[in-house]
Length: 108
Image: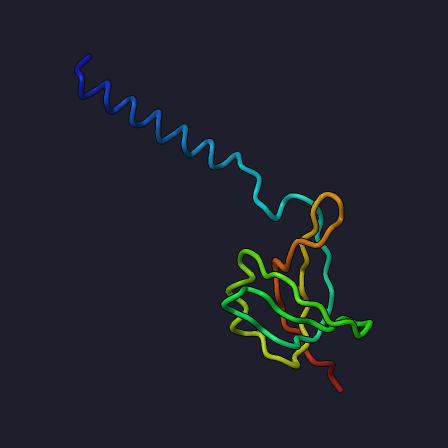
């Protein structure tokens, strides 16, 4: 076997190993649990990746926005109603918002 053949075999093995290792990692949003809540957006901090919300009890909170939900910050508008998917850790503690979806107004 030539040195070139050995190098090709080693390169293929290395790439396969990296691909396997990357595929076996658990995504951040798979840990813990999620829940949805309908809120009013009070303020958006796109640079800080945070939003301030008012929940159904009237309480105002500032929460982190994670992962793909960061890209949705540009579509959020203050005063609008949105369904947020919240990511919690294994202990049930809030970690951040992982999905943002506009609430459609009720038909009359």
